[in-house]
Length: 298
Image (cartoon, rainbow, N blue to C red; front, top):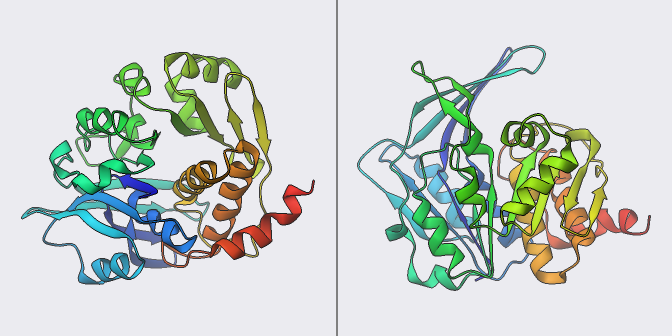
């Protein structure tokens, strides 16, 4: 198995000044990229409730994902309400949270995965022993920090959070992905290079930092590789672009061992994601390689 993605799926409600729609959400949903680009088996580990729509089960199943780690409990699924104003500013409200994911939810066949990637929506949805289990089995253990730097206040609104478990968790992973603001929240008051240096000292070998329209940077102890923004044909919805970037990077890095190529591959996957709404229309490997060809030649 090439990759396993761990984290809660979400029943999202997206509200804008002009529309209201339901969508499948959560970083784990974007694992559907993996079979689309010909990964050799890709699985997810998540918990949902008895309110999880059959439509979403069908979408996940038809994508080609291995669903042995998708568990249904007699409770609620995680439910996010995302409200956008006319300027695109977002307020997130959590109406429900699924049960915590524990090591018992890991099927035995998942433990030989080359990559186990954690993409939690909230700080308390994963037992840290899940990351320890991955560390002792997978070739690469990876996290997206998004869920760790946000909390839910008493009214259900998502607010910034001090990542108190930072050092322990970062000591268990090989790859960590931040966006620019998440990095500033994780290491306050320092330049990006200084902040990344502190992160690398804690244990990760590779740090990915995305900068929205300014592309991304891949850091190791010896390299800083700038990855340009890959231009999309249309800009419809940026939701999930960070998740797609992480998964695309991990799969291509495992395949090529080339950081620059993996970064360009990740950025190109994200450029396709922005062209559609939700985790539904992923590109093929042929599509990705054709679009990124011109960037490789620069």
